[in-house]
Image 1 (cartoon, chains in turn green, purple):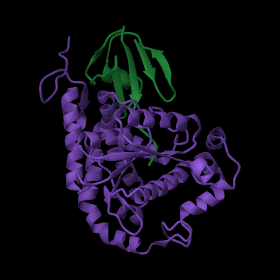
Image 2 (image 1 turned 90 degrees about the horizontal axis):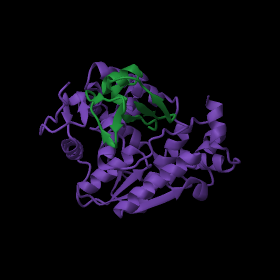
Image 3 (image 1 turned 45 degrees about the vertical axis):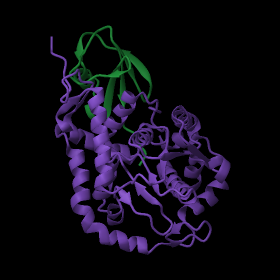
Image 4 (image 1 turned 180 degrees about the vertical axis):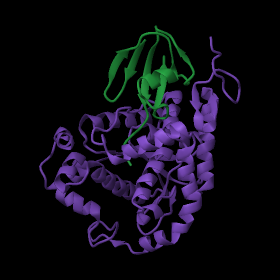
Length: 65
Length: 318
């Protein structure tokens, strides 16, 4: 599947079937600080991902105080 | 094949899991949860009334657009204020998001440009005053938000600070046992002596939830991080808190909301003494600890300095 990452913006390819939380763990990304979006729609941590999917992993942390 | 997770409220397919609530929600009931949390914060801390004239501090990011959207949806009248900080392309794009949001909804957005109206921008201020960029930025924004609210006749200034923001600031203040800052870290600051009333309606929502609100509502916001914030302490505190949240969901909410409930009342008298001690700036009339306020001193120094490109300041911070 194709995965769009941000900050910096880049695209990577991941092989095989995954669960959302499994993918975040594999990429070393905290579930509390990211959202996963498929076709413009949010998907929960236990959603299965297909090899054909194109998803965005969007960080939600901003740095201003 | 695993059964798709379902919304706790209606049983329809879920779009988000919220471990701190031990629940998953569909889009409709996630929005209901967010509205409920904002109404609860507004009511619990007496933030707003239907008669208020509200000014929302808008950056073009998820939190400020989410809080503006939520307030309008809840029936409040609210204008926005955007400050052009002059942080290169980042500021240009953030302004575009703020303007598009206002235009699409027929809302009034006031704009202030640091460079046009005060003769400096944040990269230049950081270099000229040798301040950390986020410090120069925060000082400028706080002063200009207050000024616009007072001069515009607004009764309340709303900011989009969320639970993560407040918990991170609280962690930083606690690590230093900074009683001055701890005593003023409240979800509501009443109007007094040149300060407008300031409220934070998102303090019961995490930033994952405010970002999700924007996605679900179709709100376009600036996802990219401010280039000058990279590596700051605030982000480090958020990382630390999110690591704790991962193993103990609800930790951030307990840390911040129990501070407000149990510790803030103990610190209240200290905060009162500090506010009573403030005088008035001899130049602009704003509240000031000395003869001239920190903002006027920053303007004097930064506007006399030749413009510094954002890349130069970032390079110096690497």
